[in-house]
Length: 217
Image 1 (cartoon, helix red, strand yellow):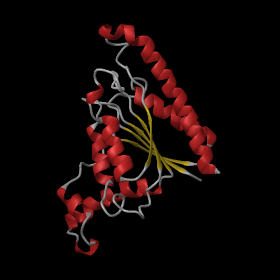
Image 2 (spheres, rainbow, N blue to C red):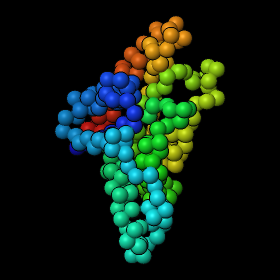
Image 3 (cartoon, rainbow, N blue to C red):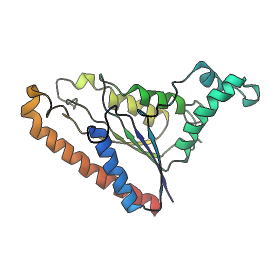
Image 4 (cartoon, rainbow, N blue to C red):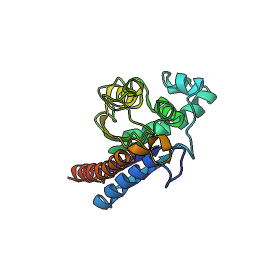
């Protein structure tokens, strides 16, 4: 049976977060299609992983037999996250845009799981080729041709680390204009927000079902 690694990183709770709502829809469609599968869930906001330390970093490049007690303890936490990545058959990430980038909690997870020679820059990486779906929600629009296109660092950055560095098979779902219902200055954009949100939920259901079917075959 396939294993889905599901990460959320929004500071907002369920019901107030678009990224959480869409990842929840994806996960539900996955579980409906693949009820015998396993889901590993991490809420990186309510239970953040440690930011990478010098001990955790240097331990990744040293023979375990030479680790100091501090390195061994720090790397043990990092190892848990790496193994979860390696064991996943599919990955789902909620990545809302904060100040043009990803939440620091998600960056901390990435810093832990990116290990040169094991998960990165390694043709034999166990994670290579794993499908990853990222729900990249944002309050405005940073789509090609929009005024804020040059400020789109979420998809560009995650493409660099997830696809180019870790070798994962990356797909995005992008619900945008999520601030339109709350910001009077964006009120005329509410229909576009609603259309984007509806498409995100549709994409989540379709993509999750197709992925579960493919992995179960």
